[in-house]
Image (cartoon, rainbow, N blue to C red; front, side):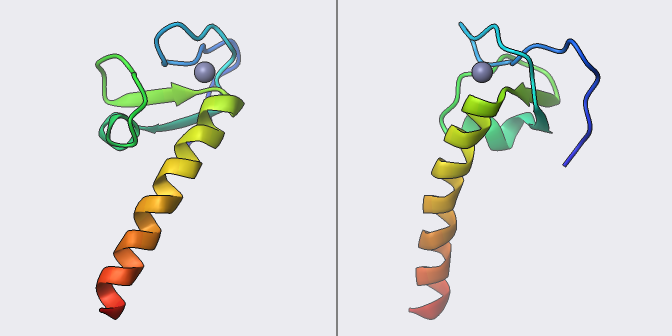
Length: 68
Ligand SMILES: [Zn+2]
């Protein structure tokens, strides 16, 4: 998990909160969040929670696939 500088804003369109996490952009857009272009996406706490929720579901599906 990358550290981010203070004052960086969340990359999700319409969100103006301070970013708490930095993640690779493709992963974030794959999770269904609307981030702009760029290699890194910055997420505020709320959007990071949302991102985690969505990736959790994905991981579960992957697990099922491996078990099946
Ligand atoms: Zn946000």
